[in-house]
Image (cartoon, rainbow, N blue to C red):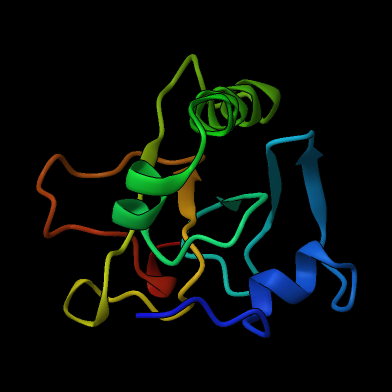
Length: 126
């Protein structure tokens, strides 16, 4: 799948659509999800045109990959999620539930989550 430069996350990165920013550096932008599924639900997106984790892992420069994952850790720490724990989720492709085809991860926290992966956060769980 080709990257669509007009996807919502690309537009947020360009400043065309506002977001409730949590963190930004040279590698990533983090912002609150507009439909949170947990008390803390933040999206972290890399600064680059990557459709999915597979695309990002195969094609992003090493420095961007490292900087992005460090940013994910910084965001979790900044939000106070480290002591109690949190969940990182990235959907991949249509069968994986990916809706926006710009690689991103969801950080969920602020409550206890079950250990089963089928027990993903739902809007009724907040």
